[in-house]
Each structure stands twice: as C-alpha cells, then as structure tokens.
Length: 164
Image (cartoon, rainbow, N blue to C red; front, side, top):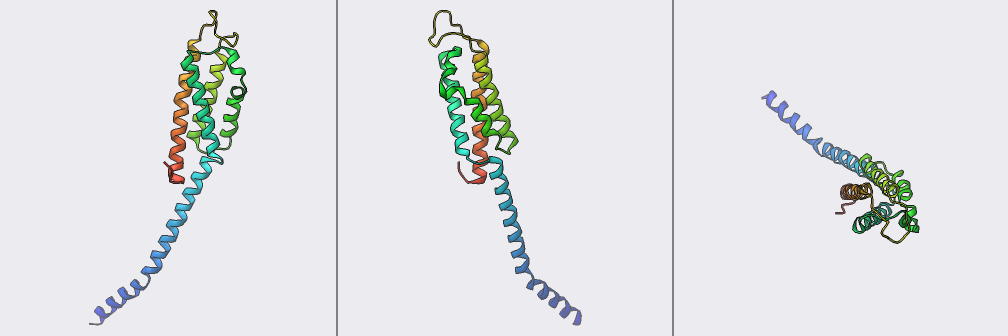
C-alpha cells in the first residue's frame, strides 16, 4: 500500500512540472525560429528590392540583345548599360547567401562577356555588322542565371517574409 502511494505521489509531483517544461520548450522554439529568420534576412541582405530591380533590368537587356540577334559595341555606351555589371557587383557584396552571390556574380560575368564579344561598329546595324555567336550564347547564359538568382531570392523571401 505504501509503494502504491509513493508511485502516485511521484506522478503528481512530475505533473506539476509539465507546464514549466512546455513553456521552456515553447520559448526555446521561439528563439530558434527567430534566429533562423534573422539568419535568412542577413543572407538576403539589405534592399533586396533594389537587387530584384537590377536583375530584371539586366534580364530585359539580355533579352533585347537576343531579340536583335546581337548588338554592336556602341549599343553599350548608353547610360543605363554602362554600369550594369558594376551595380550588380556592388549589390552582390552585401549578400551572405552563397547561392545567390554565385548566381548574381555569374550574371555580372555574362554581361561582361556580352560586351566583350560585341563586334566593334557604329550604333546602327549596317551590312558590315555581323553578330557574334559567343555574344548570343553569353546573353542566353545571362538570362538563365538571372532567372536562377530571382528564383533563389523568392525562396529566401518566402522563408523570411512569407512572400511568394
């Protein structure tokens, strides 16, 4: 009889601590969640909307090159096209996510290759203008990696902000 009474009092004593343990687990879970969200925000970096705008502008320019079947060197003298790679590179330095950085750096390199492979010529396409196959391939490569970078940004944002 004494053993049965001791067993029931042990369970009663243990049940007293259940709310405290549940509160502790909830607090620890909240700390872990907040830490993950903070880490993802740092990985995404500040002013993610600016990076998104620059990537969509680069994609539009890559698609313009593909639509024209290549462009001459003079096409890159426009103000918005001169600093494209440098603006993307500046925005990349503020990111912590390795995949996002790699994708944006690949877009920068593709932009540089597109401009390097551009044939020297005047701004208007003449009969002497012959598009470079390497320029077209680099533009296609750039469009692919812009899409990968935007997809990675969407993944990070959906985990952090709940945006889709």
